[in-house]
Each structure stands twice: as C-alpha cells, then as structure tokens.
Image (tube, rainbow, N blue to C red):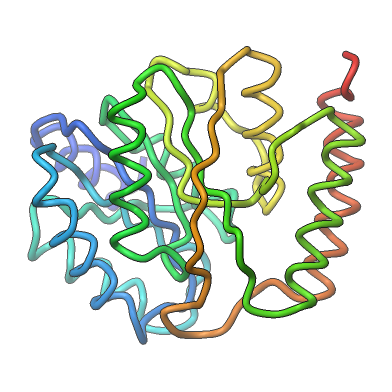
Length: 246
C-alpha cells in the first residue's frame, strides 16, 4: 500500500459512516470543480441525511487533483479518492471501493446540477428497494442524441436491456445490492455493465426523467472515436458477460 493510500485509509476509518455516498469522477474539470462541489454541498446539506462527496481524479492534466486535495482538506464531507489509472470506469470503481454509505450514488459531475442530484437521491430515499437512475430526456446536440439512441438500441438487442438511457446519471442504489459494488469495466462500458448486473440479479430499476444536459464547463470527452469504442465495447461485453438469453 502506498503512502497516499495509507493516509486515505486512515482518514476514511476516522470518519463517521454517512447515509449517502456520492461518487464524482473528475477529469480536467478545474474550471468548474469548486463551484459544482459547493453547490452539491449546499443542496445536500438541507436534505436531512449525512453524506460524503467522493472526488476521484483520474488522469487529469490540469489542476483538478490539487483542487480535490484542497476541498478534502477544507471540508469533512468531501473525500479525495486515489485512482490507479484513467477512465470513467476506473474512476467509478475507485469510488465504489472507497464508499461507505448505506446508499451509493455515482454521477457525471460535469453535467449534473445540484437540483438533479438531490431529486434523484430523494427519490431513492422514498423507494429504498429500487435502483434509481436518471433518464436524460434532452441532449445538447443532434449527434449526441443520435449516438445515445443507437447505443441504447444496441444494448437492448445484445442484452435485452429495456432501460431508455444506459449512460444516464446519477445512478443510485442501496449498498445491499452488493454486486453493483463489484463492476469490472474500466471505461464507459461500466454503465452498460451496471444495467446488465441489475437485470441478471433482479435489482428493480426505475428511471427518473432529467431535462438538464448542458455542461458546467470544460469540453466533452465523448466524440466519434469514443462512441465507436462504446459500440464495439458492447460487443466485447456480450462475449464476456453473455447476451440477453443467458
């Protein structure tokens, strides 16, 4: 265990167990990170539940890691989580491993407003036996809408998944749905794996419509190349995990 990991483990063990664990992978988001985290803290503080915000920088090339360290040092409810590599999936995995709450959530910090995060968490609070996830009903560009539609159709054909928005976040689930804490995909496929695990384990899923989709800042990492990787990756996930009738 490295010195950084040892210090994080000691810090984690010293903190009281929160009700909500919110995992926030961070990638080159220095321009809006402080503002968004402040908004999350204000929004969640009024909900009557204890919480931890798990900041997981993964492969950042800007000042995001230093800002995560700064925020964790300043606020008891913010935790900086070490990630051994880059990628959305690795960021989520690292957060899942570090999370301690009875209810676990992960979301795209760049696109999730404080209001949307709180509304999905409160819906999960009212329905503790469900997996609750966002269904983003609007996309900011035509190519993102078409790309999302094609990917969702592919996942339905390959795996029998009837979820309307595979990649939609926030995603929230009770810790007792333990298989969701052991997702194996390192990249964007982790969301399809999440949905497939829910289907295989019989975890009931409800989608909450969310209309906001604009980024807080920075630029999207989803382009034609990354979309193609997801389409091909879904085929690889089928080979690894099996298809709709398995």
